[in-house]
Amino acid sequence: MDKFVSTVENHEIPLHPLDTQAAFLNVPYHFFYPNTNQSDDFMPNDVLRDSFYRALERFPILAGYLRSEGTGKTTVVVDRNDLNMPEYLESTSNVLFSELQDAKFHHSSWPNGLSTTGPITVASANGRIKLMNVHVVRLKDNTGVVIFVSMPHYVVDGTGFFSFVELWGKLCTVERTLDTVLMQQTDELEFVFDRDLISRSLPTERKPLGTETVNVYTGFSPLAEWLAWLSPNTRGNVLSKAKFSSNVVSHTFRVPQQSLESLRKKVCVHVDDLELKVDATHVLAALISKMVAQAHKKCEQNDQSAGMISTLVGWVSRAVFGAETSQSLNLLADVRHGLNIADQGYMGNGLIPHNTQCSLSVLETPTDAETLAAATCIVSKIYSNADGPLVASFIDMLLARPSCFTRPMVYLARHPKSLVITNETGFKLYKADFGDGLPEWVCTIPSFVANFIGFLPSPPNSSDIVVNITLKEPVMKHIVNNEFWRDLATIVY
Image (cartoon, rainbow, N blue to C red; front, side):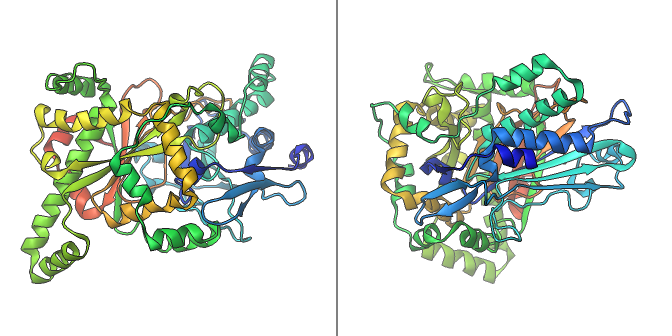
């Protein structure tokens, strides 16, 4: 660690409005490594620790602290004399790696205390928000190692997160093997933390934003304004007590690529726009959108038959907020592609949500290829429209209203049928090799925030898509019993 401190140069990084869009959330993942060869020298702690600080030399932003200027403006300060060092913990466990395998890595089999952060970004014991938390757990009889890593969305998205973990693995391998070729390749990697790259890459052309997106970000909300005015610490404390994860259930499924592609072809038969690019993940997003809408409808029907009190509560809710006739679908897209900077090593947040309102009359219809095509077209049109001019218009809107970053969160909380879907199949979940092979399984924390859907890649040697679904428990019960979904997907846990 001392060597790392000696390399630090004082600097400040004003965060971009894109960094604030999910600033209240962490990016937390677990990496499960088996000691396949039963090696005594398996992922040694001292080398893991040393290479971690060497990787940190390339990511000094993770040792900075947040300085809030209010209403959405935040700066990361990296001060050599006042570093906010990442939390780096090491422990041992009485759990064997084979026990994790037998449980299919279900969280009930994990070592106690493995996850050291939750979904919401909160201050640590010293009163500061850590910009990285790491927990290295060596399993019983050295049968494996589990590494938990968490970073707040203030400083990275999935690209930056997995780039750091992959770099850490490369540097660990170099230290253990003295591989000069790998060392040279690692030295040539470029990581850009200057948020001005986004501004410099914006095109001059602009494209109108969708009405739904504008309404979410510009609609007046006293609660959202108050949350934006709070410091990151106070906002984290407030949100952590809001119980976004209460009565929430998460399930993980695997969807065979071959089955999904077959479904995509059936759906495309009913797509009239022959120029519209329909990806398999678009069909998957549309299917989940329909399933969730159908599940909510069944929950409402069950509530109505449950008794007078439930009926009265539902009537009051509709009277106050209005009866929901649509589902707010928020699809996260990476601006790096729209701005043509995907190859420039940008490590800041590059995700923007594209919001659209999907009519419940469309989503609630029984699922077949034809009805699924109608929902898929909505998804595909959103992604096809996410080009540079649209990104520029979105950023213009954020710059004009720095405090608007809390409005989507408040909007989603008030609309329980809303969904946030992120496609992380292109992220490097299974690229971090510390010298003993790739992880056998990578996953996030057991219960994330409600109504959040993530598409992840499968472990090596598989093209399947892993789908994490987090919903309120009554809604989830209908998802796991959905016949169309059960024919397509297999539940992992």
